[in-house]
Image (cartoon, rainbow, N blue to C red; front, top):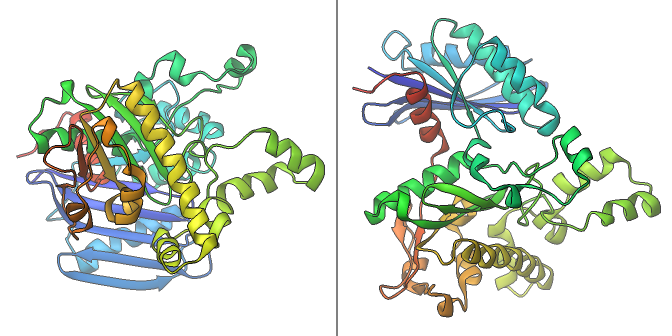
Length: 399
């Protein structure tokens, strides 16, 4: 059996999936939350069984011990489903990593040196790597970087108009994020349409609590909305997305906001939450439908920014063959998709109202038969993409 363990380690959480790559079937999955808090939450799924626990989880090392105990207690046993490779999600690879990379001590050091470019992500990612390498010391570990898919961006697309010496010294440029998802969704869309991936022009809209858009031309990212950090771009659940940088100077001078205050404000207290009081698009759309003016305004701001990026990427691609929606909102919000694509018939985008409204959790087409641009909903699977890339990098073949 060729099995890959996929690990996504956050600041206070650890997500994992055990995948049999012969048929790309998830054998087991789990989520360990509130690491470092007095009471943590543990969920483990195996087949049709779901086990939930509470425990104090002091650090990521202990979280891995809990994960291993869950495999032993609830299945599958590591004796029956031992992983051949461990794949790790790493958010920031800078301009050093262009694809999946076998992890050794030098690579760990590189990931650590990139922490300043993603302080909320790379540190916790690295904690997961080190915990996993302690537990699985005798098998390959592979880093799959969110930024790797975007290393094909041109200098024109990735440079900011910042003093070049300052930018070079502090490595300030657009790196993008969600690259693993954008790659998976654009490839899956091509397979679904039975079209050559290298010929397809795709706008991928990964819309969840975190959100980004990507223009994929023949399998290469040529534009993406997230920037040096995941804060730039679309309005998100709690993040502002694009904002005039001088707003920060104004808040500092007039309101006394510190750097830490501004970081918290823009990343955790803004976006839909800041506009409406909730970061849940379902609540916002329901309130807007009931006549709540504040929710309606928040939804309009949210969709306005989304339409701005869709239009920009249709220009960047010189027209698109596909618009693919993914992420929790992209896959499930009929209203957001309808509003975002309204009035785009002159661009060749014709949404079929009935198809858009039909509940369906698989990949599907929601455009009309006559639409020149095919509109799809493609459930993303970043864990599977990480497993595929990890297996490839480790030189292992399934079967």
